[in-house]
Image (cartoon, rainbow, N blue to C red):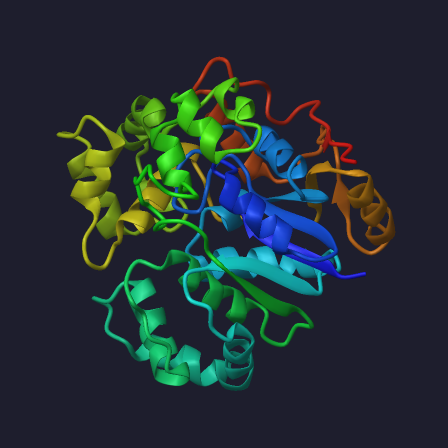
Amino acid sequence: MTVTGIIAEFNPFHNGHGYLLSQAKGLKIVAMSGNFVQRGEPAIVDKWTRAEMALKNGADLVVELPFLVAVQAADYFAQGAVDMLASLGVDNLTFGTEEMLDYQHFSHIYAQHHQEMQDFLKQLPDELSYPQKTQKMWETFAGVDFTGDTPNHILGLAYAKACAGKAIRLNPIQRQGAGYHSLETEVAFASATNLRVHRQDKAFVDKFMPDADLLLDSPQASWEDYFDFLAYQIKTNPDLTRIFQVNEELANRIRSAIRTVTSVEELVDKVATKRYTKARVSRILAYILVGAVEKPLPKTIHVLGFTLKGQEHLKKVKKSVPIVTRIGAKPWDEVTQQADQVYQLGNPQLPEQTWGRVPVRVDRE
């Protein structure tokens, strides 16, 4: 049987995600971000609720990406997720993209020329951001054209790179609906950004989300709920450079900016430059908020939920892959669990995220 992997945030799960799952073949395993997502933002609803959304709409097994994988630039995000899915026996990777291209071909190119491509990246000027450097790499070695705001396409290339040399077939699916950050309302598929903006509009959410009540009835969170906590961390930490990926220049920019801003959005705008993109700055702020320091990634895989089919697959792989379904006295991943505790501060109605939690089980017909 085909075992298909999907890498996702589901922030929140919408009809476009449902379409993607419907196009995937065989057993469907989702590697999903936890309570903080790739662009460095807290998830709109917690990871357990989002896992339930996925399981009710086609996923068979949902596992959690550790914080230091989930909140990373595209290449590191993709590599960590692909490695996890490969260990779970995935032979197919399905993903949405704005550009229907031969990603398998790009994966072969990277497998053959990875050293040259990495050397090329190192030679590019420092004033370019890392995303700009990787685009130049793909343009030079694979003739890829970049036509604007295509974040799923860029992630697709990161998946191609991460799958190089692995027995995983890349299966791109044409992304449905308007642009990634589109706020259009007269569309067939609304973006996750649009749903976050209209999170309290029941008619809108009902139209573009399956099981909309899971979003509407759950405690919600946004970056602004954490501004005071973030400001406290910045102002009281004697050495921000101890935080993951914070260098002296960023530390100085952040310390200077926090004196005059009143929101996370303002802070990101003040700190960002051509070299330090807004997404990178937002991730850095998430690291500071959580107090994240560099640590080895966990060797075990944390399960957030499953169907009967997913549970049967877990039984098959657990002899070769260490699995954790309930976190006890021994931590699964200290950084992720610390992030979960911080996440709970954003809304007093948020339930316990770690201790005593067991996988969500959904029995679909």
